[in-house]
Length: 429
Image (cartoon, rainbow, N blue to C red; front, side):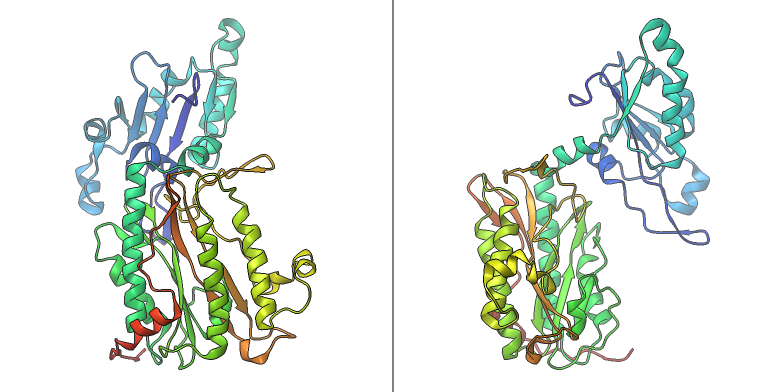
């Protein structure tokens, strides 16, 4: 409210999305709407009117309806939106057109992000309808401002409750990865490993996969967003798992790469060690005052050095970096903010100037090397090997905390963990 000053913000919740015919996807609330309200239901609108004489926080929600609730479950309703969610006043959603004008008629601007077909035209109409008022009385909204930048700035720094939720999501994510390492063996299918991951996520109230889980074995690990998860895992394969639990709307995001057989081959070990050393070095750079883009620059330098050392690249480091030769084997950024969204909103630059890490930021660190099976001018022993290692890192006053440090990533730790677990898992499709 301080940031919108004499404006009014209108934020619609997400709607149910059709999966097929009359069946919907599992509902997930709009992140900005949830950030302000905590309200979990669809078909709602949040209005913030800082200068309204009586009500400043207004919710429009689905009313209680016994018939609808018989089919789809209990609704919070109008009265509980005030008592349980702190709204100054709440109205049934079907009264939006009737009630909204009292909140916008005297404001100077409306903060609204276009993209909801139901409300886009309504918001524009507030401007056109109030032209006469502005001309005769000097009041009424005359502009529409996208509030996305405000949310990006606020959400980048997590408060104590947000950190608590990300920490818990990271803990559950770590447990799932450890289970997968223990139980994955040659002969099972990628989708069976995905089921192991999901079983851990779903054991927790309001826990589920925050994004499409990647279970990539063998050459599939060189495909960055591989989600088919239908290959049978073979002896000698590396298995790359990129999976994160969403808990109470906040996310974890972890990647580990390990040998299905329990032992790295020498070529796998060589590439893996390069990625591991880079990742650990980058994490040590995270502390208040470090420019955010420094991690990308250092990652490129260290990965290029490693690729030269093991024979993936040939030439002078500076020249190779200038030609971006590393992009053949490392083609993404080094990390991203994490929070309400897995790839969270990120106000990390002011114009051309990158900002510095600040306490309360949470970022992933995820270097990788991916050698596609059809890569040219590459030693044959490296073909089809893909490695990525990713952790969630909280910036603290003193430096940083790795929230997902409990998942083994050193070669000897992974091999020791897997050596102590020899499960019997059905390979029936």
